[in-house]
Amino acid sequence: MTVLAFSCMAQEKAVVPLPTPAQLKWQNAELAAVFHYDLHVFDGEPYNQAQNRITPIQDYNIFNPVKLDTDQWVKAAKDAGFKVAILTATHETGFALYQSKVNPYSLKAVEWRDGKGDIVGDFVKSCRKYGIAPGIYIGIRWNSFYGIHDFKVQGNTEFSKNRQEYYNRMCEGMVRELCSNYGDLAIVWFDGGAHGPEQGGPDVLSIFEELQPNGLFYHNLQRADIRWGGSESGTVPYPCWGTYETPAWFNNRDDDVGFRPLKYGNPDGAYYIPAMSDAPLRGYNGRHEWFWEPGDEEHIFPLENLMDMYYNSVGHNTTLIMGLTPDPNGLLPQPDVKRLKEWGDEITRRFGSPLAEISGKGKRFTLKLKGKTKINQIVLQEDISKGERIRKFVLEGKTEDGWQTLFQGSSIGHKFIHVFDGIEVSHIRLSINESKGDPLILGFEVFHIND
Image 1 (cartoon, helix red, strand yellow):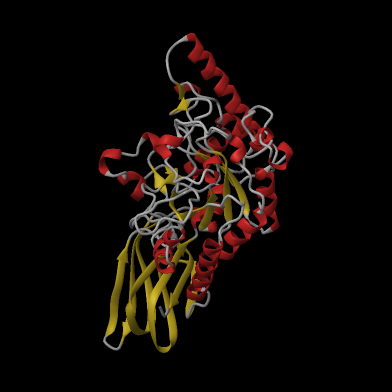
Image 2: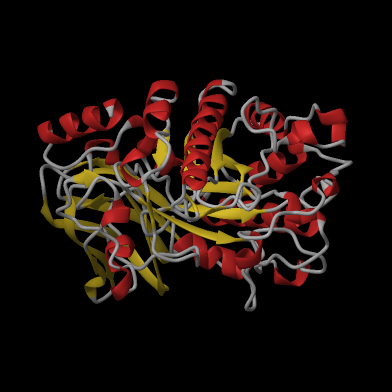
């Protein structure tokens, strides 16, 4: 496990655990898209995860995205401010969206584009065209076509053992194809994890480490470069530390206490494994749809809800992953495209022009404003390339009655956003009362934002 060993060596020499270059890029990205696309988008029926995991698609030639345009998908993500985009190369049906030599249940099998289509290839090219880092999601835990349930062929006969061995080798072959045919990838995401040989599954980690040493691995029982944030709400609570107790969060998640370790992390954890927040764009008003369904536009999150996610994910030291899904024509629906553009424009409007800003090394920073100025939001950033060092801090504003405490906090990490009722001040002060090593402030910005 070469990359992880390097990370651990670096951590031993530092005051606090350090991110790898891939983890640093991931947190600096702040927003990532994951595009879900699979056979059942084309069946005209509501997505039923439990059934789709166990029921093979009767006719895979329903797959026919006649207007497929991955440029349109990725440009929509770009307009929202996403810097990483991930595609489901395979999901729970087992159908692969590329030209696989080891998995016949792939685009080679369909009539669409005469069996020569490669959506993974199209997607990666579109990402590079628009300056977005591409990633690939590989779903091997469930495969209704091959009869895989929770990583395993059911039964304990010679037949099932042979089928399991065949499936494991096929998965290794797909991972080798996807990790070697499309250039550098920002992340390779094994949804639900990836059982390794110790659990009777394929050895995907060694293939990843051989072919994608500069990417993020997510995840198995041996290694996780990021961690799930404990819900699919697009938010995490405060504080959410980027460090964790174990190198693979799946071993230490405490389901019985609401995934508390995943949500909060551990400031004294020995491993740098930042959290991610995830949610589908079509998840409003009681819905939670990762895949396109007919007549579902009213469940696209309103802009207000998306901004709330932003504050409680990016503003709580995590990267926000938003689920997007193209329709049966192969296009991201226009209502989704419109909302993504509105979201990106609103983030820029709010945070594009700070009233004042400062950065540097030290335990106290003071911003002088132009006379009495009304403010209502503050953005703090640590230089996390040197790790999360700050443990306690205070924000104060100087009013006519003297210094007034605005917030007392603990974690800053990549980014912390504090929102409060508007107040007139002449100065804003950040005091760091406890840290491991010298505090390094990458950004201390003040805003007045009108709703």
